[in-house]
Image 1: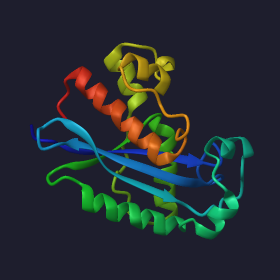
Image 2: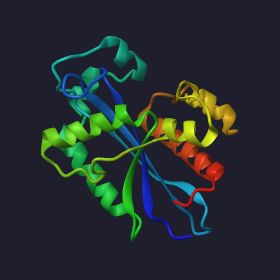
Image 3: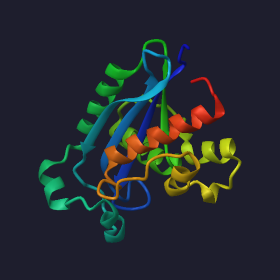
Image 4: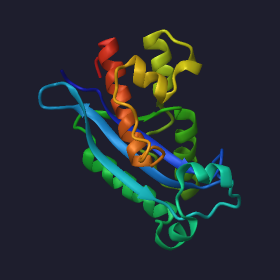
Length: 193
């Protein structure tokens, strides 16, 4: 089977609901691509932590990811450097002859932060103006309502292992779990990547 896309499952953690006013403080990515046997697999992974700089901070949003803001101020990557590292990783990992596809579980949220940050830093966005949402994909493939597309619901419907609560809301873990959801949905639909 020849692949048309390299799927980049991306999860971000943020200090609030919208980009610009609030920070994206971590980014996790996991690739879904065909293995040598032709079946899709979760391949390379990436994790970046980003120095906060936005004017607003929502403590309830930050409590979800639990990242220490003082540590991120000292150790987090500047936004532009984080994007340069993401772009270098995408360039290195994109399968020959494929296009990059951004995948998010509730893609409008994650993609908005990614897209805004690329525009703010004036750095080319390898994903362009498109994103694949696993929630919407699941609603169509499984014939369920969008409100029934939480990871917990999909875990049951797709016979996936439960999320590990110790790692949930760490961006790289969430991206990898989302990659498993994408593979299960493609397998269920018998879609050709």
